[in-house]
Image (cartoon, rainbow, N blue to C red):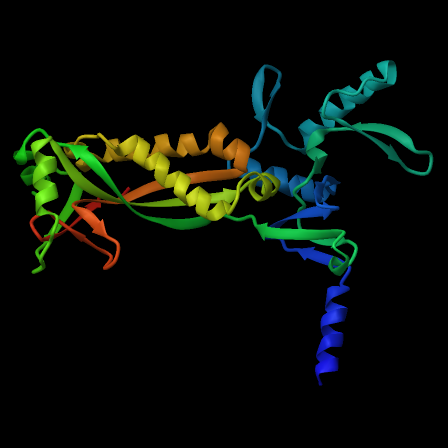
Length: 314
């Protein structure tokens, strides 16, 4: 029955359409380049409402107030622009001229009505086997990702700082649990050397919640975007945490400040604007004295004990 299977494979390759599900975004490629498409108004309304609900929508100035861009705002802007177009035949930069109906009536439309990111729906294209056009899909919903562990060097004033960090004081904002394991740690020499320099090795564990906001930028502007975003998030956490003082890591406000700074950097021009990835939250859940042994996935303290520092509920 090989011929039958080959026939099924041939027919499946001829499929001239691709379905983009509601939880996805799609890109329509023609001769290797992503093409812009007009978005149906019903779907555009849903997109704008979802952005507004997540506080990620664009804002415009109306009556000296900044408001989120919604369908009513778009219609009002189009009304004003079309009045001006009838008089001057001038189209604002980035706007689109569309011909409607049998009479090909001209209408200038807002840029938000057009996008390379396709909403849910069924899209026709030339069969992929001809390698002329295709539709690529990717998830477009929030993702929670464990960024794993990160070792940094924190400052200490004296050995007293290490002892104080391991004490679960009643006024502490952190719950510190210490459990001793019988193991032969080889980090004693390194720990002593760092302590003489006023440093201690601290192991952090971090999480992120993010969403692909612009699939075109994500798919075309960065290679292997998931792993690259993962590494970028760890890099930014490292930049904002190395050189901090050990005693600060039992301060809830200090940790939340680090998380907010990293989130703001990731939502800045380098990641959000260029890669199209929106970061909802960065969370640092653990901060333990010692370093991560990645082979056995355990956190060892310099004295051979296992130290797990859980930052309080937030």
